[in-house]
Length: 257
Image (cartoon, rainbow, N blue to C red; front, side, top):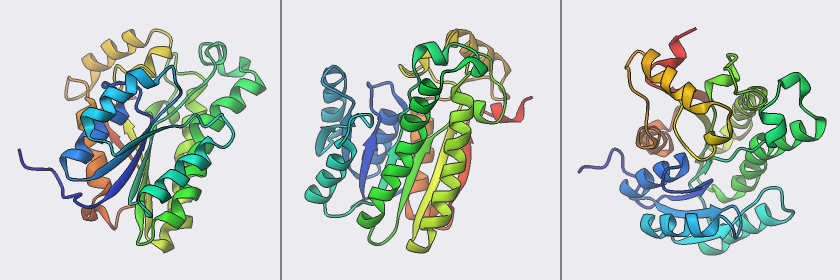
């Protein structure tokens, strides 16, 4: 099968593989199929047994822990990138978290601590990784993150992650503007509902999937491979004049009220 785009020689860091069904894994697979070299992360030792086989199957050149809540781990990750490769061509940031009690309650009832944690892990960590990627992207590069249309519309049960993802999308635009003079592009990919481990924390997510599949114009949900195809295009040279976008890959869900 012919590769969608040519990523030969490009080096990419994939943050957020939880298992073989995660969005990050689907994107990493497409990056590899297109010729890119991949480094990856796992959250902690508890998560490692789920991630390591996936990383091995993808041919990841190295796998390191990265819990952005732990002091020094993000810094250590980028030190590893510099030590292994000396440069970086693209980054996929696919991590999000909110405490369950805050995520499954009303937004107005969210605690200050829970809101701050969700913003730190899901949004500010992208800014932190953009800042650390900047000196490694010598000839330019691309920074990707993952959002959801609950950022702009009220989606039942999405709750606290709605305003957090809205902040992430705004942050992406500022990253694109600030790093653009160095040839560094930034995008937020907005997939439709996909059954992933991260999504399982959203209350009644299975119902959301069923409703979406019945309502979207294409009458079928997207897959992680669909997201990967878009991600591979965005990090390729073919997209070198596209930046600062929030791009839906959702079978047309964003068209609906």
